[in-house]
Image (cartoon, rainbow, N blue to C red):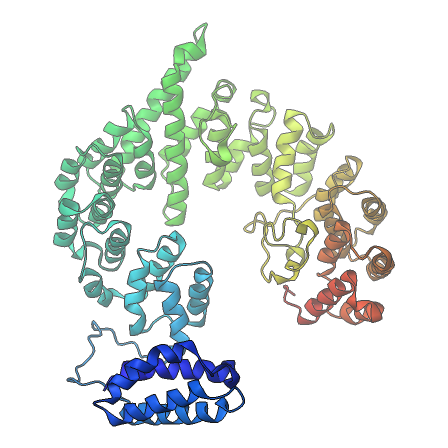
Length: 636
């Protein structure tokens, strides 16, 4: 019996039932299937009955086709029901769970979207995976293969997230990762090695060595990095260092940096002293080896001696040489990495580095003419500033004292770091009396800009009024996602800086609106006149609309008693304007943004003034604010 032919006929009948029986008469698709059904009916009588029913439907008039179509559907459904199967033939075997004992209590219908997101292509998949991770439905045996498959995903974030999820399955997953492993498998299989290294560290030596020998470039790089937990493989790494590919050399250096041997340190600094030192800088940064520190300090002392000698000559910069300038920056870069790395590992600082940095800072006036050729936050910095930054990173009282002592020295080329150190080490009165004078001239001068740079980083709203970083780019005419951010950050979350009140008076004179708004505190009502005039001006004249939000937050932070009165006034004016223009200004969007920090009780007042205007754009946005306030998603 040709069940497939019957299923195809059933599909066409179902289509006609949905489309309408009046279309069944003379249907060309049924006509196409009829000869096949008649031929099947020659050997199977029941198919002959189906063919007869098909003929009656095709020949029926549009008015009488419904009855014939129903008869045909009934007989086809009856045949399919009696001939259907509910199982499969074959032996029942235990599923290989790879020693994983996770329960599979989650219904498959909940796993299906996640499996599709892991195995298919297209946008929107990352959020599905993150959502499943948050809901805790990722530990399921049925997800192992899809997660391993996702390690090869072209979207790096999905691949990396899948790797992190698989790590939670534990070491038992290693057996599955190694089964079907392809040494020429590219990035996906290189991630398998990375995961195996995380889970079993130095327990898979033979596997890593085989991958390093047979693998393609990406697999080989991961295998070489996995050897970092196997000091006995040092000779293998030194041999692999001869590879012409830069990424292989870099991977070898990474692993050698984890060995506390003189041989490994010599290999690192052979590259560090060569023509391509960049690939050795990160390994030197992360190394905890005493031999590496000894060689780094040896080169640092040589550079310092050259600087001191060069300063005695008539042409100090030419005498020091551009090559040595680059070496100095590389040394400082390595020291910064070691300072931060040791802090993360909660180890004691290497005393040699702070002592060297202090001696180097004494040459700040000379170092101020050496530029740092690094990207990121160090763009435009000098070697003097780089040195001062390293000292600041030490985070000790002694380090802060060293920087604060540079006050008034070296043409104030390290003023930015001296000021920051003073903020973290001294009382607020001392800080203003020593550093307040530098901003009197306003932005534009070198010294004022150095102070303002630190203030821009440190002055922020109190915890209740902080926004996430760049929540909506000031909306650009939209507020549909303003009220979706439950977490708030500070620029410097680890510090609680107190500011002398004299800073606030000076900032008002200089018209530093953003800093004034962030600095005002409870009880600073004497600043309200300044802020209210600014608010009125900003609403009348387009400009930096974000200032309106900052002003509202400043008024809220000082607990200005008539903030609700101002809010109602501006809302009523916006509603009146919307009646004629059917639009709202960018200023008003930012105004609503700031009002989202009002107490929950403000919701009823705002809703009352909207009334019948809720169909307007402004009214709808205000109602969104009302809903947000009632849910109170932000931090209390």
